[in-house]
Length: 69
Image (cartoon, rainbow, N blue to C red; front, side):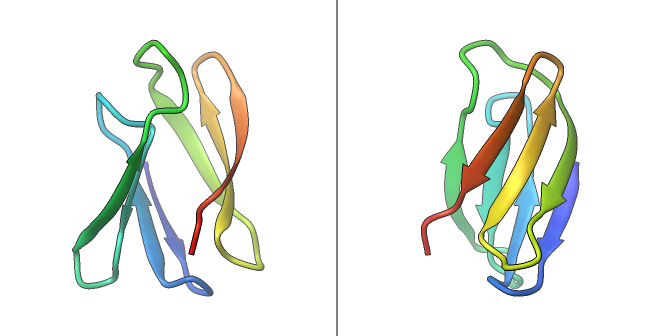
């Protein structure tokens, strides 16, 4: 999955190890987040209109996440 956050200017991606990886628009990695203990695949990101917050739907959970600025 990939999501663009226009307000906070972040790009959110996932991979096998982390449900959220935060990048700058220029591709610099900021932070990684593992939201669940097992390697749940991310099904969808939903970015909040205010920026810096998103819902992450995985195979087993729906998580509300706030990214520190």
